[in-house]
Length: 269
Length: 356
Image 1: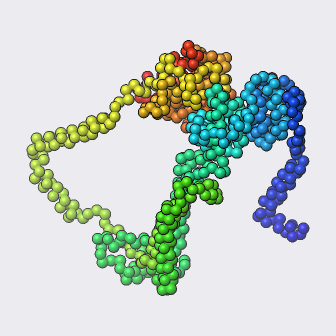
Image 2: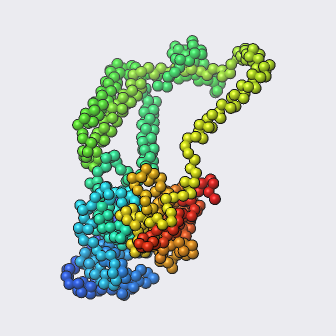
Image 3: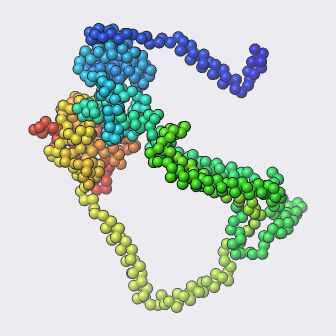
């Protein structure tokens, strides 16, 4: 203890105390925070709906109304369809953590079985986009070249040409598409979550959506090939130029200064 | 490297030999004068000047760097030969990069840096570093030379009879004045005038709105509230020679609003059941604006953040744009397809000089 006390005025002491405090808070939270409970998937459609209604009453009704009719705190869910529920709850956006310019993505609060029950309940309120099946959004079934064309026409204005995302007005933003489940990308196009416009099957057929997903798989994953090397976040020519100016010219200036600052004389003065 | 050029100066040939350094230093020793010229400091030697072993070491370093450059060039040629263009390798932290591009870049960098660093090390450690001061000389010429040149100039003017023969002078000035006009004519003829191309697009009455995703005409029932669709005029083909010029003016975005949400009377009149069609070209400098927010009905331009309110006649609500986005008046034809009722009423895109 004495040894520890002797070092309490060390310049790094504050940092060490801060790290301990952070680790303790994080550890306590991880130990005490409620973990999502797993629940068995019941098969029958009516059981799904009634179970979904129960989950809805507990988790969603305070904002969306007891029958999903909406309130001042949340929009009506009549006719949004099961795809919207699967997207919003599956990506953790719903239930919303706090109000703000945009509801954020976060770790999911429900199991897939529970999400399916909620989706079945919401789908029973009115017809809407249906959760896609895996063969609809499978990237293997898409043409990535055609998808690139479609992506640049329809999506790149907000999501960047390789899906890195971008800023919108008043603190809203188009999120990055890297690491997003192909099913959720498909559902987002179908339903148009939050301020994103929808791209329904009538104007963008299912095959076109699969093409877009195939394109994103080709350009925006950890395994994507970059012929040019370092992508610098694929933010385009302006950041690339800035990088070259700051780091390229900066390195030249630093080396030139270093060379000139060192004397070659035998007598160092 | 600092002494470059002093050998070539023509003025004052006999001064500044190394032997005179001592004399310069001697001038400094005037007692009691704090502003006396201290002269040039004495030359200091490098280790390489004194110690032949150090000089040999420097020689080996320079030779090593030049050899490294040779190896870099050989590696460049070798990688060009052995790596196929479609071979990818994983390199942390760059990810999966082309083996050819990566190895060409690294080996060429080694080849060039080897020459550069070798030359710098050679110059700093082995080449002569004797200081060679070159004092400033008088900037203006002496009076005799100036008087001489003035006299020559006057004599030349007299001999040319420029002042006396007025006809020669006047015609020469006339010729010099007219000759730049040829440039005006040539530059004026660089291309055809734009005529009225800035005022018209490929849209016309009865032309169907084609969905570029499917290449099929758009129908009102295809477009739910909250969706975003783009459209190009019927008859415009991607293989057409002027496709890019035409689509750059005719690009259209189509959204559906609830009719009760539309605040602008003209916008409602020009819509079809709440389906409105606006030019996709920003009225500021012509970037494609289509960052549509379906809840606020705002459209944001990514270039300079101009924001347009599609529920209020595409009014500019933020940013540098000076005009609303032009609206295309639409309706349905007998087959139930959306069609344009006319071309845009105002020119699309940024303002230009003669725009009314």
